[in-house]
Image (cartoon, rainbow, N blue to C red):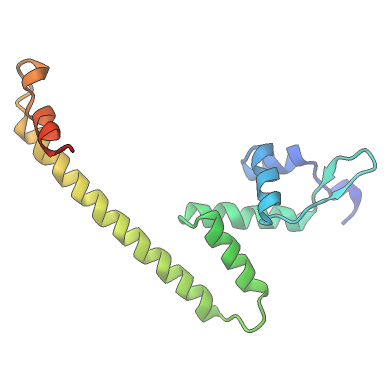
Length: 138
């Protein structure tokens, strides 16, 4: 890649929709390779860094943690790793998402029950929602 095609950290951050601090953090975590430096000391990123940042961001949108993303990236280069290994990571994430959905449904139903119990009239000190929270606390 020619130096004209290289991006500074600010341009990479803008292209990736993240902050400069995020780029530095990803570098420290090894999610983005350390860039070469210009004689001025500026970081210079190539197309590979742009692609890697896109991978990280897309994986995050699918709910993968940075640790899980690191594991996915490691599988890509690990000798003997197969698509089955990647599929297993995806299935694990699906199970985690399903657990979260179940928990959110439970919370929604509990809140709906509390909201139904409250007529929306009277002093806050007599609100059945607050009373239920007090009764269930501690």
